[in-house]
Amino acid sequence: MVACNPRFLWAPLLHRSNRPTEKPPSVPRTASPRRRPDARSIDAERPKRRPLDTLSPVAPRGLAAEGWEAEAGAPSTELRVPLKPIPSTDHAASRKIFCPSQLPMDSAVDGPRQPPARAGSRLCTRCGERKAALKRPKTLEQICRECFYVVFEDEIHQTIVDNNLFKPGDRVAIGASGGKDSTVLAYVLSELNRRHKYCLDLFLLSVDEGITGYRDDSLETVKRNEIQYGLPLKIVSYKDLYGWTMDDIVKAIGLKNNCTFCGVFRRQALDRGAALLKVDKIVTGHNADDIAETVLLNILRGDIARLSRCTFITTGEDGPIPRCKPFKYTYEKEILDYFSTECIYSPNAYRGFAREFIKDLERMRPRAILDIIKSGENFRISTTTRMPEQGTCERCGYISSQKLCKACVLLDGLNRGLPKLGIGRTKGIAGGDGDCEQQATRSERNRSSLQGKHGNFDF
Amino acid sequence: MHLTLEFGGGLELLLEKSTKVHKVDLQPNDGDGKVVMKGLLAWVKSNLIKERPEMFLKGDSVRPGVLVLINDCDWELCGGLDAELEEKDVVVFISTLHGG
Image 1 (spheres, helix red, strand yellow):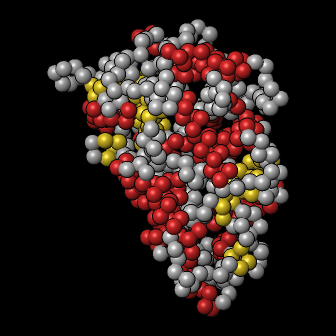
Image 2 (cartoon, rainbow over the protein chains, first blue to last red):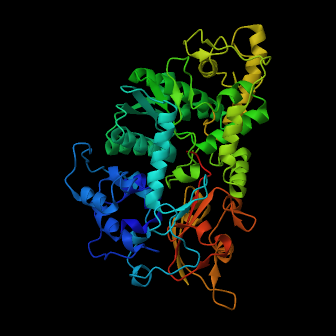
Image 3 (cartoon, rainbow over the protein chains, first blue to last red):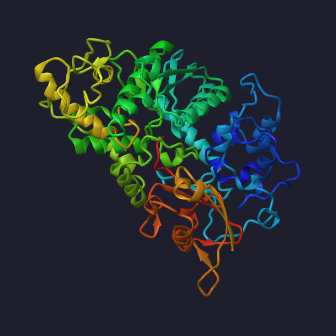
């Protein structure tokens, strides 16, 4: 019955854990829409699987589908993480997404049916056996879901290997927001770590901004990930780090510039959390669409410093904790998950115009996203362009091109009852006279970059 | 024609009571008794979407970034707007236009 939900195969892990553990006993196995004959054994097996397996209901490389099925039914190996039932809170239950097969039985709708033969349905170009179910944006290949999981994971493995993202023994923090990208990243990394013996110590690192009703859900997701993937979780909160929750900040400054605070604080919070975990690297779930969007925005803003580094797969190598983006070449469409919780402080914060532009381009020519990244990578910055000098904040020691880092300026404003400080063209306390002007320009930039996108742009 | 429609990735917020799954009975309005995706989108717009239809539709198609699956299969492989629907088909709409 699990396979009835199209999204189960697409990116199933969150959904799976939201599902009630008790299945209605009387529900007969219903035929999934457009069901592939050779998928039957997989369908029959799946309910016994642990959530750990659910993102990748396909044979690992080299294993025939039947062999994999046999293995999946076998007693768990020592690699599997023992799973405790996860208590679902009322809140979580209210967010539960039903798949068609979980709705009250209606024999007219849910009864067994033959998959209708639809004209134009082709076989997977990779295995040549199963019906193609998706079209890869990168290559326009039409492939089945089983093959999709294999190529998806292999590509990320390849990206990791080609770019030397990790060294054996590295301690790596996965920036986990509870959103689709980081959740898929946590799963794929822990899977690849096992499969290809990266010898990494993986951790989940989350930031609790203190937004009622928003992070609660996503933190629940991260906590489930902790159990599902057996990764230790560290949550750092704005309250602990800065003494202010986002709820407090919004009370003080209103809804207008709150995204600036959130974005600036989050970036630092991640670094501080990583320092507490003593990790060597932070990985984030930024995907190809994110990076293409950032390239465009940096061009539009003339932000040459960011333009030159926003396509780097690893950034901050000169700083204490480098960050990298294993999903740099991974399309959002392929990461898509159905988990969604909107930030309640910007309910209209759908992607901005650049995002939409990118989706338009993708529709016309799917390779466009990769090509924008390529353009960004191959930009040559004129040697006469003056770059901001990277220093450290006098107060907290965090990297900053100003005397005080952005977070300290914003925090100062909050604590002194002048929350607008550091936003827009306010003369800051940032010290240096010349600095002020520059500071203001920078804040202007930060503000526009963070609005409408949950502060996700700050690479 | 009975169809199951599912909305996710934030699209459900555009619908009444943010219901994700809708079982609908659609009357084919043209002579040959067919329902194609184009007609379904128009029907969804006028019957299900309660606010901000521009988050769902652009022109006569879905807004770019909204993924459409017909019976678990990307609609691009089924003919897109011209894909013919059949009794008991399951159509899923998921938006990518929200945070990651």
